[in-house]
Amino acid sequence: MIELSHVSKQFGDETAVDDISLRVPKGKFCALVGTSGCGKSTTLRMINRLIEHSEGDIILDGQAIDVYDPVKLRRRIGYVIQHTGLFPHWTVARNIGLVPQLLKWSAADVQSRVAELMQLLGLPVDEFAHKYPHQLSGGQAQRVGVARALAADPDILLMDEPFGALDPITREKLQDELAKLQARLHKTVLFVTHDMDEALKLADHLVVMREGRIVQQGSPLALLQNPADPFVESLLGGLERGLKQAALTRVKDHMTSMGPTLPAPSRIPGTFSLRQALSMMLRDHSDRLTVVDQHDVPVGELSLRRIIKEAQLDNGNPRE
Ligand SMILES: Nc1ncnc2c1ncn2[C@@H]1O[C@H](COP(=O)(O)OP(=O)(O)O)[C@@H](O)[C@H]1O
Ligand SMILES: [Mg+2]
Image (cartoon, rainbow, N blue to C red; front, side, top):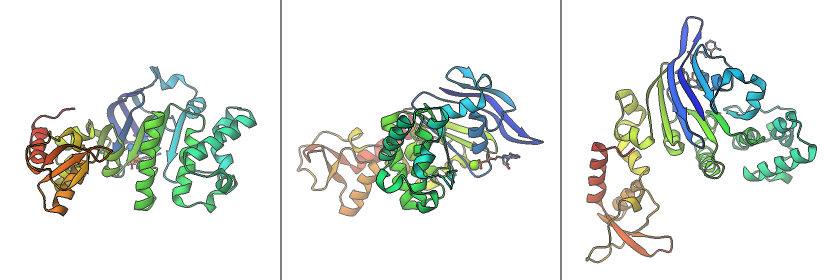
């Protein structure tokens, strides 16, 4: 769906993006992570042609982007940035309806689409349709930004640190909502962030950049299991790496069948993570948990030994 092949960008003498290749298959969520100035935003902006690339090929849907008209291309690609870029003198409803209106949808169609999106993003129409951007909180403004990007139902979404300016609680809430939204809409997403935890939480595919180059890419688990070098390892949180890996692994994938001994008193749902299981073991001073299904019926057990063994196995044999 999105394919970059040996793409570079020079600004004068400076190489901002240096020979990068990556693929985002249709419906997948790819996160681009790296410290400030490593070329993440430039990479996104080359895809919607806000910046023209210097070398290499950028292919969307099998077509080189050079053949598309830049304006039409941008209307097909949703774009969300940190400071929403909403028009300050336009109401929320008008901001969201911008692209459909440019595409000359009928007024009735624009209106019903705007209402649909406001509902999807948790912005009650009665309360928000007629507000102006300065009357919104940071989190509400980002929701409007996301609604606007989705307005004409683009297949592709480019998001440049969309939650970077929000407080941690609002940020986490919007991350959870974006994950739910993506599970429903299956957009092809390229998401830029300097926050590794955000990337680990949301991405199917993770791309780590440094000084214009890609240093490693793969699934979040694969990177956690085998970081390519000390830079990637430090971005992944150094010693915290084991816990982050446990956070991405579900209890039910590692439980064993119920043993002959009495079931452990502490119960954990199979959908919880190994990290949550470890936390429960520490809290309850127990090295064994009973795993339950959604009706709280015991379906297996999980031991500390098992978690530690699995972690060792995973280190040796990455699955993805
Ligand atoms: N329009 C531009 N003109 C000149 N240099 C630029 C321009 N945009 C970005 N750069 C430079 O390119 C490098 C990468 O920038 P950027 O892609 O914004 O990084 P990131 O988004 O990862 O923080 C930086 O050194 C930046 O100064
Ligand atoms: Mg940037």
